[in-house]
Length: 330
Image (tube, rainbow, N blue to C red; front, top):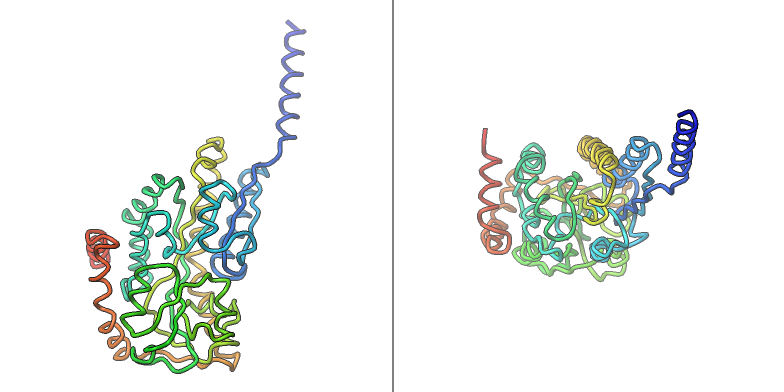
């Protein structure tokens, strides 16, 4: 009996030593914006929380600013298992066959952050993430960034000010329709190429939240930034389904908890980071910052009202209706 106990004890110790020597699970987290943006900071917070919660059994390696993959490349890399986690903007889900995510691109769809979070934090958003399983990926969370504003090398106060300008957009039929409705020429470019394209005059302007504009140094190549808040830019954190479902259940639970906390953090800092960036743009002295008045915003809303109607067949009329109903609910 003592011999059996001794053998059992030795086997237990050996298994613990072998377990301790196992290589940690690696999560490669690729994204295309700077590390000091809301998304970059949320990714770093997730890394810290995930490694702490799993006591080192998981290591998260972050690749910001397109260091590993660029825009559409990262979606393909995720599906192939060449990277485990990405957080693309919601405009970029078309190639996955999830074009309903482009509902977030509709101009003036969300009157404020409270209305937006009613969707992303509620049953509609959860249902959208769940449907991504059919595409071979798992949707973990929506991460906030902010509302977009127009920039150009001339003042932009009324819709006709964009007429004839070549405006960079993300790969979205909604954004294409938006620019065409304003008389602009939409040009799809990878985010990492935008600064050089602006500097070279390949494009005349773009749309970004202040944090993306400032951290990419666009104040050096754009003379005007108009706070229009005409559209939203957010992200969905997604992970390779095969990788995620192959994780030990306890590890997956810890990572889900880390993601929930990182998501709360992302929401809490987004507005603060954009406010700070907007002030930095002003202080740079290189870009004039204009803020639309309420009558001016109404003129933009009127000019873009037809886009939502035209995009119903592309996005889904029922989804648009459900979102509007949820936003209007008391």
